[in-house]
Every structure is written in C-alpha cells, then in structure tokens.
Image (tube, rainbow over all chains, first blue to last red; front, side):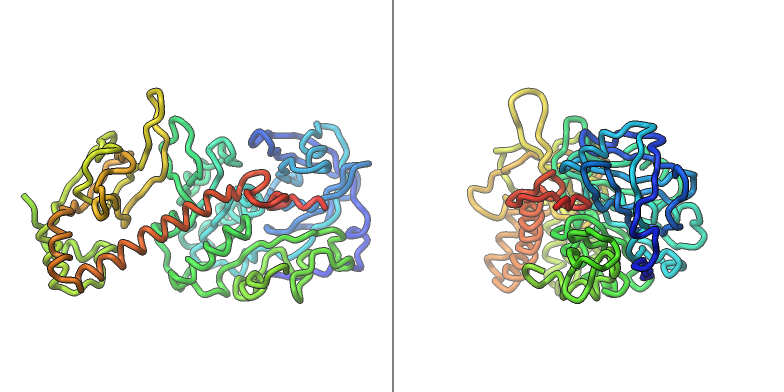
Length: 280
Length: 167
C-alpha cells in the first residue's frame, strides 16, 4: 500500500469538473457512471483509491474508484443511500459533477505481483476491488492463481453481474454466494466465509484483498489467518466519515490513522487491533 | 453394501486426524455414494438416519412453502457434512436436501454410528466435538446472514455500510 500526500496539492482542495458520459444501472439502487474531464483531469490513480464526488448544491461524498483507468473515463459505482448519492445515482449523461482526488492508499498491485491473488468482496465492497481485479486480469502473467469470492444479499443485488463470465474467461476463479436466493438461483447460498473454506489457498503465496462491511471483513480475515495467511498479506479497505480527503478535518480518524490518507487500504496486521476497539 | 477403505474416509476433512481405530469403525458404517443433479437426498419431516460427508459436488438445503417453489436455505459442498438431525431426537429432517450438481459423498449410517458412540464415549466425545464445530460454524454464518450486512440499512443499525457515509 502506498501513502500519497495530497494536503498541499491544489487538485485535492478544489474539485475538477467532470461530465457524466454514461450511466449503467447495476442494481435497483446502484449505478455505475463514467466521468470525463471537462478541463483538467484528476491526478493518475491506483486501484483502491477514492475520490470525493460533488453533486452541486447538495454535497460531497467519498466514492471508491471502480475503473482501472484503461479508458478515457473515470468510473465510479454509487449506491443510493442519502441525498448526495441519490442525486449522483440520478445523474444523466451531460451532467457536470465535481471530482476531488484521488485520495488514500491503494491495493498495492505491484507488491502483490508474483503472488496468488484472493479477492473477497461483500456487497458494494466489490466496487473498490474491481480495479484491482481488472489490473490483474490485464496482466495475468504477473500474478499466480486469481480467485474472486463474492458475497451478495441476493442475486438481484449483485453488482457487475454482467462481467463475471468475462472475468472467468480471463482466467479468474469466480464464485458468488448470496444470503437470500431467488427462484431459479443455482449458485451458492450462505456467507462468503463458507466459500473461503472451500477455496484452494496456498497461504504462503497468497495476497488477500478484502472489502465489505467490517462485520464481514473481520470473520473473513480471521478465517484467512486460520488458513495460514499472514495478517500482513491480508489487505482490507476500511471506511469512516471521509470529509476533507486531505487529513485535515479528522472525521475519518481510526485510532492513530486518518483513513482518508493512511487508508482506506491497510494491512489486517495493522487493522486488527483497531477493529477490536469499541467506538473507534 | 456398506464399508469403505478407512484410508479413503480418512481423507475427508471431517474425519481428518481421528485415531485410526475410530476411522476404521466409521469406515465400516460408511458407503461410497454418488448422486445426479436433481436427486432429493431427503425430505423435511422424514426419518433422519444418515448423514453424508460430501467429497465433491453441491447440495442445497431447502424448505417447502406453498406452491411449487422451495426456499433455498443454504448450499453445501466439498468437505462439508450434510445431515445433523440424525443425532438428536426426534431424528427427523428439519429441511429437505437436493443435489444441485453431481455429488459424491460418504454416507454414514446414523444408528450404527450412535451405537459406536454409546459403547465408546471417547469416540462419542470426539465426534460430538466435530459435529458441534459444524453446527457452530453454521450458527455463526446464519447470524451473520440475519444481520443483513449488505442491505441498505443493516439490521440493528441506522446507517448503511460501505461508501455511504453521508454524515
């Protein structure tokens, strides 16, 4: 994971204007949008970083970058949950949005080279993992076995559902489990840790990238440790109230960390003691 | 015809590490079975007298509801144990089970295993510890699912998870 200092850069403090170039509905409440710079683009970004998206007149929210930067568009997946995200989800091509960033640490894809990649996602947590996966699948010779385990509430809540077969065709072993199966579902039903128990893992050769609700990441990380994966090789993406993105306001403090700068991606070795503290 | 080579049974995760004499006892009560997709292993309310140690494949636990559909409760795969109701009264299946993908398993005869456990409490204690682990893992998983972590507002909280801190 690489820490980038954004506090003194002008791009971090004031938004760049981006125009919505396309929108794709992922689930009934989740939309992926492609954003193209109107004038200056944000600085180059890495898988795992996030931006602050500004819906004019409404507010600003932290959103993980979901694209790998291969095309001209900045790709972000947004779930409608409050006023700002609802406005962003309702945006249409041609609309202008403010973008600050990129912020925070990344998944460290360079340092993961030479290892098996185990991607474990829960719900919308697949969004920040998608660029890591796309990066790995674009250069599979750099990595060993690529395994993707996805937990979703139900089949209709699965994001990027249309991409899974392509990921499999590109060499990833992709498995999905749902909490609630719908009629006709023939896949797995249960929690993602159950998929983990059946996944082939070489503990010494595995780098795990984990993202989802913390109550999902903790059991996943513990299960990985039980399988012999070293905590330093388990990378989790954490969130708190990211506001400024430049480690000034303190809203995203987690113990000694300001997650907008020192996170969101940190090793489980570092995260585990912090996640065990109540009210942190 | 029951009875399989103990060496074959010993490779299953549930049995791994058991003393050889216990493995031999269980192997004598086991049958090597395979089922095609769509096969109904058991039905809710039926007598529970067997369990299966899945070697390969995919099996769904389900429950009847009015109409033709069944509610999928959970799916199990290689390394899992399917069937716990044989162990405790009233020894009736609480759910149904259907094979989703062709499945191979070791089928254990419940009454025979229980008889071995009754006559050798050390074996009984060892098996109960292992079955308790299976049950506990499933209980934990069920509790996590009850939390509805991926929902808009996870159960018991007022705030959605992930990317959604609009405070």
